[in-house]
Amino acid sequence: MTALTLSTAAASGLRADAIVVGVAKGPKGPVVAPGAEAVDNAYDGGLAGILETLGASGSEGEVTKLPAPSGFKAPVVVAVGLGAVPEDEAGYDAEVLRRAAGVAARALSGAKKAAFALPVADAADAGAVAEGARLGAYGFDAYKEAGRSESAKDRKGPLGEVAVLGGKPRDAAYKAALARATALTEELNRARDLVNTPPNDLNPESFAAVATAAGKEHGIKVQVLDEKALVKGGYGGILGVGAGSAAGPRLVKLSYTSSKAKKHLAFVGKGITYDSGGISLKPAGHNETMKCDMAGAAAVFAAVVTAARLGLDVNVTGWLALAENMPSGSATRPGDVLRMYSGKTVEVLNTDAEGRLVLADALWKASEEKPDAIVDVATLTGAMVLALGNRTFGVMANDDAFRAAIVEAAEEVGEESWPMPLPEHLRKGMDSPTADIANMGERMGGGLVAGLFLREFVGEGITWAHLDIAGPAFNEAGPFGYTPKGGTGSAVRTLVRLAELTAAGDLG
Ligand code: BES
Ligand code: MN
Ligand code: ZN
Image 1 (tube, helix red, strand yellow):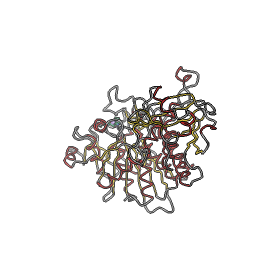
Image 2 (image 1 turned 60 degrees about the vertical axis):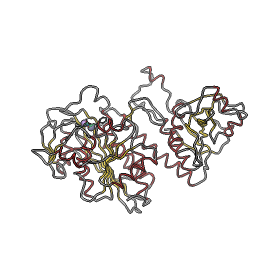
Image 3 (image 1 turned 120 degrees about the horizontal axis):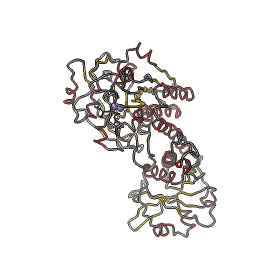
Image 4 (image 1 turned 135 degrees about the vertical axis):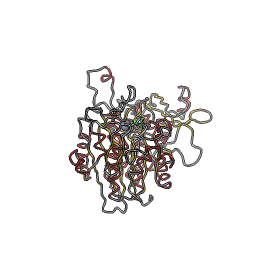
């Protein structure tokens, strides 16, 4: 992965392939952003004019490459657009820096080293640049055999090294920001790898093995319930969803504990390693990307490992509800009734509404430990994608203040989310003549119906929130900002932020 350093070196003397500068959109044309003064001086203060001549405006996502001024060791200057010049003293938003760094890192794929001279005003800004660069440089090429395909030959590989300029490398706050960005982006990119790994290689068993190995590496206790243990424990939801697959289901528990913890958070992730729909088979056109249906579990996994690597003073338990949803002679049928881990019975009306079934068991199990709060993350419904689009996740909760705190935490770390309601009147649509509840209700408001279903499996009195990441988890369009095509690592940063806030006593 792209190496990260903080540097105070002068831009002119830096041995690198490129120097990245920021250019904002001013009222009368492009404006060179702070951090690039030395570079601008070397062009005799003419950088903005040169950029304008080259057609640059400073708008977000724009990249302009030009030869570096004479005397510079680096041959190229890359000017990356920052959008509008900030109106107030606060300067550039961390998310603007994160995105610009991501765009620049992507434009520099194949290069060995680049220095980023972006407008860094404090340690948090330096962390944002580092984060954006690492996330933007991400690529998934595990399945491109070098020399065997045209696309493999054209591949350049990620930018090798990023030196963040403008910070104070010896300052504790800057060091901490860089360390945080390093751990977070490593784990987030690993979550992306898991999502991108094809479902013939990533199944419940192999996902559990990845979690077990990571647990050993980072001092996290990992327990895996295999099929036998799930049967013994009565996990009817997870077993029912996994029943049609040759690859049996798993429930993985990751426990990170801190001796200084005052609070306990539980994260629960939907981990359907492939969602064919089961007997209620998805039509062609709807299943090609369904390897992404374990993105919630990947986010939970990444967040727990990041919390451990950062040594946060909070106990965090991660639950990965892993199953493959397949049709076969042994698969659950529409009409079957499952006896869930909680003891409730569920009539399965549609085997494609499987995420709520595996989550229900994991939520009830997580509740038994009486954590201070539970947050589940799931690519749960197409309805949420219709409602909020491809970049925003929905947040539902049994506590309005907690829901608001999550939306705020997401905003702080640059993730788009929106609060969604749990309207009581939608509950009766899931009444079943046969069982305690059905796994489907009214079609309208389907994302909220799913949230109401989950709520029934949260222990009495426990604060709970549900993040439906079906939209932002997998990017089928082209890359933008620091977001690649494919797995995005959606919700990882929000979960990590929630753990940090809880550790600091600022949540709940
Ligand atoms: N995994 C899907 C939801 C999904 C859709 C994720 C699009 C990512 C992108 C989920 O298991 C599902 O199939 N949900 C059904 C529920 C319905 C049958 C009640 C849906 O949303 O159509
Ligand atoms: Mn489904
Ligand atoms: Zn699904």
